[in-house]
Image 1 (cartoon, rainbow, N blue to C red):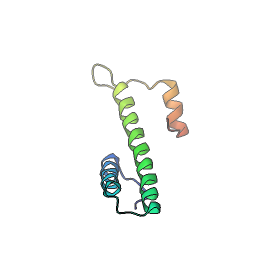
Image 2: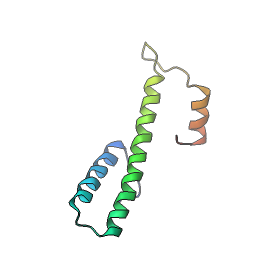
Image 3: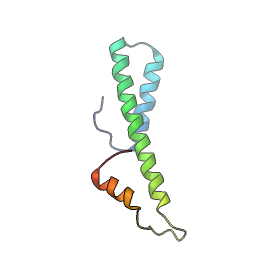
Image 4: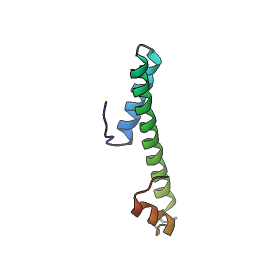
Length: 83
């Protein structure tokens, strides 16, 4: 299993594989738990990336130019915090 996720698309692909594997039901309890934990981590990663994309879209004005980010968003990004 990968510990590092390269991008949203690879995370979705890995998550789909995990779901199919878990649905197969041919794993031990420990294997199932490990895959489930990885799936949760991938789901959180994807959710965060989607939230980031939504924020970027919201920052675009009607002419397609970026507008300054709200102070709270700027501080959150500088601190490296995830929502």
